[in-house]
Amino acid sequence: MTKFASVAFCLAVLCVSPSAALNAQDKKPDKVDVTGTWKVEVEVGGQTGEPEFTLKQDGEKITGKYKGSFGEQDVTGTVKGDKVEFGFDLDQGKVVYTGTVDKDAMKGEVKYGDLAGTWTAKREKGKEKDEDKPAGGGGPASRVEKATFTYATKAGQALKLDRFVDPSVTAPGKRPVIIFSIGGGWENGRGTGAAGPSLLGHFTSLGYAVIPIDYRAGVKEAKDKKEFTPANGTAMYLRAIEWGVEDLFDATSYVVKHADEWNVDKDRIVIMGGSAGATNSLVAEFNVANDTELARAHLPKGFRYAGVISMAGAFWLKADTPLAFKSKPAPILFFHGAKDQLVTYDEVQGPFSGYGPAYYCRKFPGPDYPKWFVDLPDGDHVVAASPLIENRHEIAAFLQRLVTERQEMSVHTVEQHKVPRTFGNAGKLFGDQSSQGKDAPAKK
Image 1 (cartoon, helix red, strand yellow):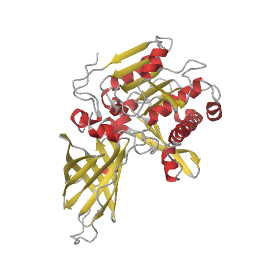
Image 2 (cartoon, rainbow, N blue to C red):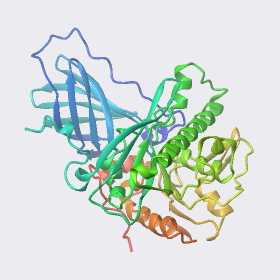
Image 3 (tube, rainbow, N blue to C red):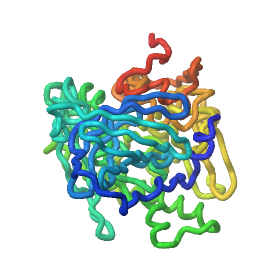
Image 4 (cartoon, rainbow, N blue to C red):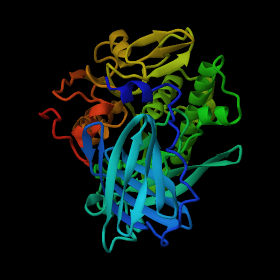
């Protein structure tokens, strides 16, 4: 386990302080403008990658997008003189690039959590407005249509959802739906604008309407309001999960309300997420299958999800709550690494009750509880995202066989890789890919 993996993957979502502030007293060079598309070469801890940044400068402020091994991320930063600093947040910590600008070139140092490296970048000619293009560039993603809606407003915060549809793909009847909840340790719940065709476009090509949602970042709010303490940390996380589940239910109700208008199938809504988003999805299904007050208050009467896809998620419940269901839960596809540093793989009992896929499959064996567990013995929390790159075939098969055809089956797939699926190996495994990793096991 690398130092970065063991330190940066922490329950409080470690945020490493940015590099030292830019020295405003430096002699001012000629005015610079970093607007444009930049091809970057980065080396961190012996691993290399080639991400792309599309940046827009307004005064000293930088905004934009990152596309690379961590999918698509919102970028913010500053320019002061010829000094530049920009980056983005991950579940695993902050990523911060600092350096200098020289016309169409940049270079400097980068920190991925507590792991440092170097980077260089060149601006691509004639691509200064690439930020206006659909995510993912050309190809199938360019056909995807996007619409954004506000599904709820809570405490003055507008909660939105994006609806992605590929109109070139015709589906028999109404389109099935995937509602996607992003990860972020409940310190970031903004799925709109972050999870788009670059990672989820494969599912629009299968005829699905893909709907990333915003949800309230309960842990961040607790910290901002100084409510979060070592004594009540677990309670704050459980409250954040409840908020996330409530928001997922409200987004679902919004989709159901507009199902006829959008030509989507309200009986084939699958919920999916990574890390915190996966945990929200599993706990949501726990509430639905147990007909809880929360589910009754925020979902249409009698509503059931058609399936759940969990990437490094778990059932995190109040202490001493058994994993039991009044009615059979929806089919579940689990992806989980046995060496996950953050989220329960098997079972934990203490200030809360945590149940991962290993426990679920042991307690509910056989096809009476339809499920598919993709088990990575050497994998860690990078499995919160990696299935979107290299397990698309399994996801498509789950959607077809267990959701659409409603086959009652139980599958346990063990993936053992020569290069373990860990955050420390992400650059080596995926580089700047948005397709299947080259070391992925052969699919039959």
